Image (cartoon, rainbow, N blue to C red; front, side, top):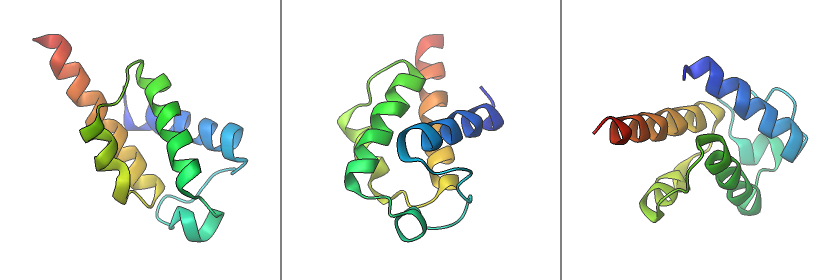
Length: 89
């Protein structure tokens, strides 16, 4: 899964779930789009669906400081690579 694939999916999620079309990559989502903690929980649920597996408590805690699209993409890339490494073992 490439970063472009991840970005495409995350943009779909933002449009469908939060009615935000093409969020900028480096703006604070809270300030620019009113993204709040309930939205963050919904996003984590959508990330779980996208990855096809539940997030651990530690993985959810890592998401606490995410503020931008780029950080979301980095986070999903990290999760995807962890899962790929785990399935290779």
